[in-house]
Amino acid sequence: MTTNARSESQTFPFSIENAFTDQLGGGNPAAIVYLPSLMALPDETLQTIAANFNQPMTVFIAPLESDENTLDSSKNSTISRFGIRWFTPKLEVPLCGHGTLAAAAAVFRDTYGGAEGPTAIRFEATSGKFLVARKVEEDRVEIEIDSETSEALSVEEDVKLRAVLAKALGENVPVRYTGRGAGHLGVYALIEIGTLDLKNLKVNTDAFVSIHPAMSISHSVDKLRAWVA
Amino acid sequence: MVHVVVAPSSVPGVTFESRMFAPVAGVAEDPVCGTAHTLSTPYWMAAKNLSGVVFAKQVSAREGDLRILFDAEEGRIKLAGRVRTVSKGQLYV
Image 1 (spheres, rainbow over the protein chains, first blue to last red):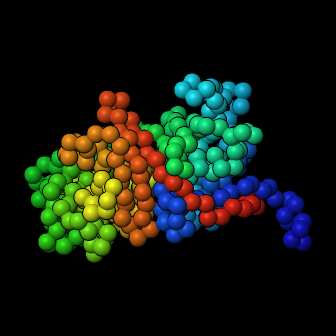
Image 2 (cartoon, each protein chain N blue to C red):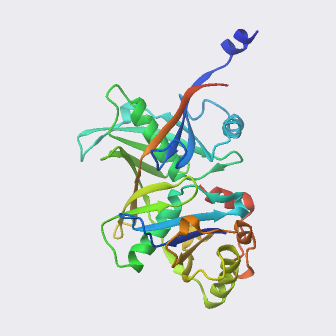
C-alpha cells in the first residue's frame, strides 16, 4: 500500500540550509525546495509544505527558460535564472534575504543550473523584483539588494519608545539613537545602544509587544509578519 | 513593530552587533535577518563615518555573521555569508 501511495505522489528534492553561518546550530535556517516550475503545485500546497517544514522560511525555486540565460559580462560566464517564492509556516512573504542566500548556496552546491554550475544566479520574485547572488571568496555567497534609509524619531515618539526600551532592555542601558525605517520599512524601529555585551543582555521580549500609540501601525499582524523575513 | 537593536562590538574584526525582536509578528527574536541589515548598516556607517567593507554579527542565540558592502550612491547593498547544509532529501507531495 505504501509503495502504491508513493508511486502516485510527485517527488521534489529539498535541503535545509543554515544561512549566515558555518555552524550546525547557527544562522537562520531555511528549507529549499526545487520545483520544475513555480506553477507545478497550487499555492495551498506550497503553504502546506512550508507549514510541515516549520522552518523560519521555506523557499521554492524553479529554473527559468535556459535559452534566456544571459552572459555574466563581468566574469564571462553564465547567470542562471530561477523563479523564487518565500513562505513562512503561516504565509507567503514578498522578500527574504536569508532564504535567498540559502537558496543560492544550494544551487551553487548542487550545480543545479548546469553541469559546471553557474557563477551567478538571478532570482526573480513574483513581484517582478529580482536579486542576484554570486559566489564570493572564502566560501561565502553574496546577495545584492536595495539598501534602506532610516530617519530619527520625533521627540514624542522617542520618549515613548525609550519607555518601552527601559522595560525591554533594562533601565541602565544607554540608548544612543532611536529611528525608524523610511518608506516601506516603516514598521522597523532602529535603536542604537551603548552596551558592549549585547549578546548577553537579558531582554524582556514581551515588552516589545506594547506598541505605543505614536508608532502604531495600520498593518495587520499578518502584514507585519510578512516584513519579518 | 520590528525592533532592531544595534551596538558596538568587543569582538575583534566585528564592526557592529545587532539583535532583532518582533513578538507582535510572532517572532520573539529573529536569529539572523538580512533585511534588518539593509537598514542598520547604512545607519551605522554614516553615524560612525565608516567606508568600505563592514563585518556585522547578529548576536542571537544561534548567531550569524555577515560581510557587507554598501554602495551609498547606487542605494544597493551586498550581504555575504557562509551557508551550512544540514539536510537533503526528497519531498513526497
